[in-house]
Length: 512
Ligand code: NDP
Image: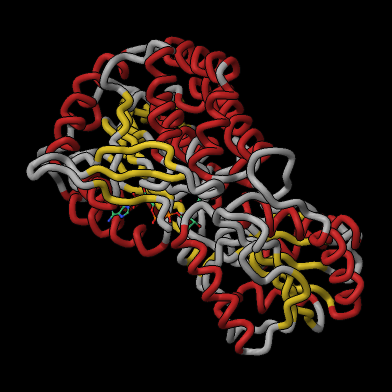
């Protein structure tokens, strides 16, 4: 069964894709695959709309975002229904991970963009400050292409969009072919809130549409997705000399220290590994636990996991796999782990009770770094536990990965947890929490190693949708510069004396 199937179309017509609900396998709609020509036309429209939008004040832009927030609050059940239909995640997850996160993002950037992006004065060093003033102006880039994955169809489409719009850009969103319906609702939401026509457009389609967007003359690509596609996007952007941010896959490690609160750590492991059915970029995929507490920790984890309720509509803890391609990866990693000696403590198979794409919440031990399950991104409901000699061993194994997106450390000693966090080669780390950095608006979010380039969110992320333009003003109306020619030996001698005074004498050093 496929969740996305090509539909027969007459020759010359745009291709169409039919979608099904991964939990019930029922059809939920069709989309059109937008062509390279459609993409170019959208960029042209967006460029015109952006001129007026960038001339508005932050307050005017914020007013639109606040209207979006109010409409989303009123219509949240409709949005949840669409997210549930195309992902098969649980209602609680749709609410917390999608709706709540988007509302928080709308509120935060509406409130803070003006503070973060207002033109600011730089304090200059040494003699320079007597001669020049510098201001940094944050100017919008123009048209931003946002390319989003399927695992957070609302939040991963809207969060970069909100930031790019608040910075004064137009946005063209290409959602995943697996979850385009949420994105179409987002377009409706912005329209209802009064966002000017053409400023935000959704182009449905598949990889071809995404590739066309990267080469359609946009001014930045904000990409979230796999490492493999991220590389292609990076090449396209490099060839056109446009910036991109790449938020890519991960293989997050959790370190459980000997002094950790075992109940909290076991709960954190379960939340970290099973949130969004494990299809979460910063989901916990590898757990390194001090050997002295490994057995007690594992027992507590298995006890919790065996009580998880799986299903889609109703009160469930864990939902479906969003599409068959991901299920195939999970089954391949589990088969490889089993063949190499891993022990399955619970789960380890498709859920025989449910018709849709459900994989049982699984706990495995006796794993090692020869197994795909400890090296490649699994993106499924698998909790893999590996006992370690001590913390040094844990840090060494946590860093033995081509990925570096998130991670977490569990210990009763907060300061020690921070010290371990600083030694983990990864984009962000939580101490006594599952990795939730993406949900903290102020924290810049991005990966190390293969997990990405650049950061989104907070000051850094918002400024990434702008060009920071230094404006240098001479305090004396240009007198010095006007006297530059004719050059003379006397002036050169004067400059050399000045340099010796500035950096070669104790007086100069004191003056800074
Ligand atoms: P993909 O890389 O397969 O797809 C991401 C997006 O890129 C989709 O919209 C896809 O379209 C589009 N696309 C496909 N081919 C191209 C191309 N050649 N040029 C431009 N765009 C293209 O990722 P998934 O959708 O499978 O998402 C899962 C991945 O995303 C996981 O690795 C996960 O870890 C990562 N992720 C990272 C996050 C982070 O913040 N670091 C957050 C969430 C997920 P289509 O789907 O229609 O083919």
